[in-house]
Length: 211
Image (cartoon, rainbow, N blue to C red; front, side, top):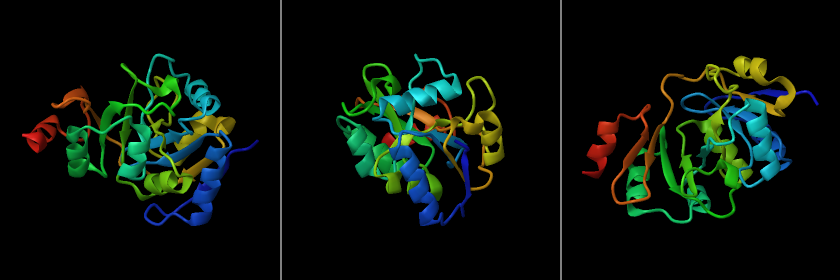
């Protein structure tokens, strides 16, 4: 089946396009969409077959965990076994935005996307299309970068199409993203933050926010 390509307003994406993308996710298919950093590859993280399609499409090593994006803190809560006081403080300070928090995962998520110790990496992005997609779908979605493993991440929809073709069901083209650094990843499961990956949010700002 040919990939459905929908151009959307990056600030006010049309409901019809969002519903089409959500329907594709509900069928276990893959959807590419813009975030505040790069284009992401979305699937239902509770659907084992959909998660497997992401790994296969990207040729992503199975040992690598997969991050999620959520529409709001309510959806994050659904993905996590619990939110530590530290996690809530960082969320209040940096969301929506390019800070990913590592949390203890809820049992509803497919185990393949989880990291060390049964953890999940999730954030609320500062991009209307990404947030609206998760809200319309009704659950957080995977947000691994929309590129083949080892290839430069895509910051526009044309690059996504060139990389994946019919491996994905639908592309939401919200224009070129800012690119640059990916999100900063912070382990927030304990009482002090631990830097997992440096990124768009400087580490010193994270430390200052919890001092």
